[in-house]
Image 1: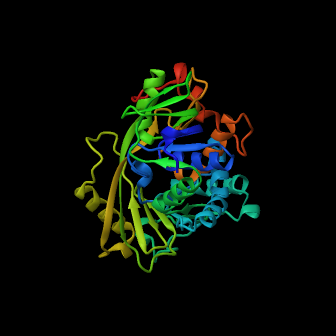
Image 2 (image 1 turned 45 degrees about the vertical axis):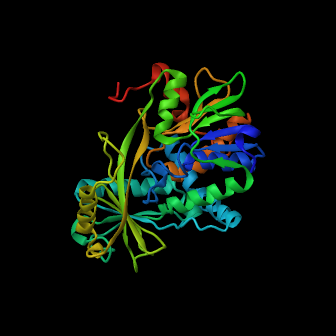
Image 3 (image 1 turned 90 degrees about the horizontal axis):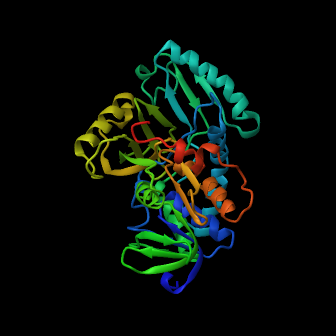
Length: 386
């Protein structure tokens, strides 16, 4: 590929995580000359984790954000299957379903109501996605019955993917059809001259710049807007030997996900720490994850921990992702802050953002709470919630 400094692009994307690579993939599909500029390496941030849980919002108190995520999860399988055909790489995707334990009568009553609302929101007759309450003792070969004395919820919309496999497929597509450079940190953008500047002083010409570097994007956004609209939260997860458990559903219990993957591993995670000193893994935290997960999932007992991971996830102060053109700019955009739902919605976020850049209508309108107007100025929240 031509060196980025020797070419002119329609769109430059700063960040090679799930949002950045998905935006580049969509931009290429729309015929835009595209370059991805990654400060470290593909998946260096929170997108390079191991959990891969694609879990829906509950079918209650429905709103545009939940509808957007539902449509994204509904369409994601087709998107991934096409990407796999285009690249020959396996993204580790499957519609695995999810178990939720019910520990009190109040929770049972609450989820019975959610099960009824799911018939309206999830359109089971058309989609096949169900949300059902099952009696105590069901699926106890996987979730220990003592963890669910009032029964369980079993829903079939939940899915999983291999985060690193999905990223590898997107990166392969981008490298094949456009330009992707690693160890290239974006530090400035001059809209008047369409010049993107790197930390080493080199530049590239691009009509549009999208800041999609996860947690680090908040620093650049603050530099360009003068406002801090997000923070980082540290997460930790791990992989265990999961041979023989590949077809089991995901479990969400005690604040943890247990997610079987088709390659014979089990992902467990993840923690959320607002206060942290670095992004390094903690052996004590890994031991805690294993102990907690084994308590409600006894079939994990004695299985080997294969690897662990920690990273800083981006979280906007207003909780919802930031997607769109930054205030006061005409060609500077951002897409960050997906927190725990980024992998499930990235392809629709990319479609919407690229459609906006091209002044066209997207397949699915973004929720208004994703719009920069929701995050900046009078609507801005600080990290303490004010």
